[in-house]
Length: 131
Image (cartoon, rainbow, N blue to C red; front, side, top):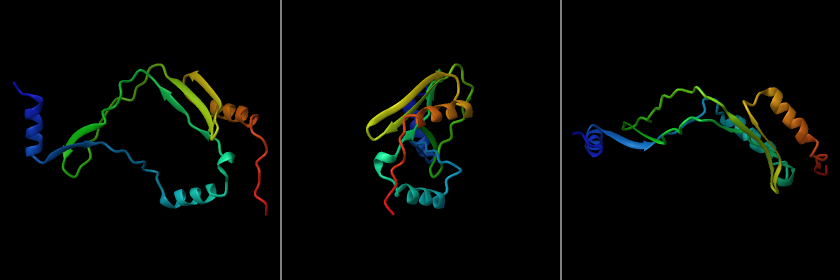
């Protein structure tokens, strides 16, 4: 009978190691990130509202570690078909949650724009820096 530990020893003997998988966005751009941070630095913390769309469904979670040859990241191929999905759209400030919406389905442009329109009703005029 083959045991988990014997499989592990065989993988290590052939130069494989277990490590955390990592993900990196193809779209990342250091210049755009620096430009964003420069613009963000012109605001005070109480000016900022963060909107963070999040969702869940019945899928089983992804494995966080995997086996791969030394120097290579493990790749997990999975089916992305989803059943019923629930979404939450919260708007956070430094003082807590300003507004939130929980709903069934997916967040599309119409839903998001409606949420932002509702959120803007809770916002005052932006306090500008003295010139």
